Structure formats: structure tokens, C-alpha cells
Length: 108
Length: 116
Image (cartoon, helix red, strand yellow):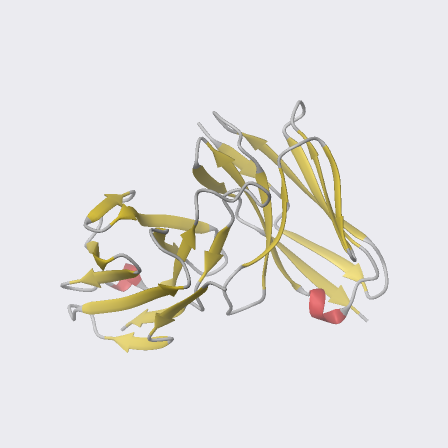
């Protein structure tokens, strides 16, 4: 079967750094996405990785290792507005497989 | 730029009543369109997707149906709602040609459905 695993919930402190991991087992791979979803709102696109390595976008970075079936989202200089769920999704043969999401709680 | 809208944003419906959620995309042509459902605290469940007018693929057997009467319009319907149909419904689109950002999927604002 196809499976994506990510932690259910994480807690971090404002101003700190947090890493959200995602592991996947899929029949195909055409890329991995990270989305942010604030409570009660629709997910919004954060990043896309198709090659191994790190992609940086301001305070957010996403890393991919295809051989390990592993990705992480790194959030730096955490702000209270970063409190949200973070969804990992894999494009497996043009079908998106979604993780259940990681709820990130930011404490002052 | 492309935009996607869905409505209504919130609705409370009695069990056994019909449902119609509508979604439209602007600024692109021949998009792939999707309906997802997200139960409280859970991941996204793909309900239907469409690659063109009148072409609907169902992922989960249920009492819901979808239609695509126009290129950029996608409708989710039910003749008789069940309590288990409650949830957050999301319409989304992709464009299968973006080389730099992959097949990035973009979501509408979402519709909260409570069946009572």
C-alpha cells in the first residue's frame, strides 16, 4: 500500500527552530509537497521537492531524500502565526497521497 | 492569475436533505478538479476528481456525486445526507504542465457541512 507518516503533534517555542519529519512509502514518486493549514481554513502551498536536497524559502526550508523516503520541513524564527497543521503529500504516479498532518503548537 | 472559489462557506443541513456545493476556477482552462473531505483532526480524503467536462472519477463509494457541467465548474451533490457526511469539504485544482512547481494543487476556501 501507499503510506505517509508524520507526527501528530509538536510543540515549540516562539523564536526557536522546529523540524517536522515526513516518511513515505509509495508506488511512484513525482515530487513531495508541504502545505500549511490554519484551523478552519484551507491548506496553502508551502514547498515542492522533486530532487534530493534542501529548498529554502525565507524562514521555511524543505529537505528531501528519495533513497530514504524521507522529507522534513524546517521552520526557523518561529512566530505565533506559524501555529497550524503542516501536511506532507507525495505525488505518486500523478495521484496525491496525503499525510494526516502535524499540528504545530507555538508557545510564547 | 488563477483563483478558485467555492460556496457556500458554511451550512447546516438535516439528515435526509439534499446537498449542493459549487466550485469555480478562473484564470486557467482545462484544469484538473478535485473534491476532498476532511473530517475533524484527520487527513484529506479524495472524493472525486475530473480531468475534463463530464469526466468524473469516484474514489470512495458513498451517497455523494459530482458533476462538471462546464470546464471550470465542479459541483458536489447528494440526494440524501447522512450524519457521517459532516465535515470540511474542499474543492481544488491542478494544472498538469507546471514544470517548476510540479503538480501543485490549490484549494478553495472550503465549506463546512454539519448534518443534524
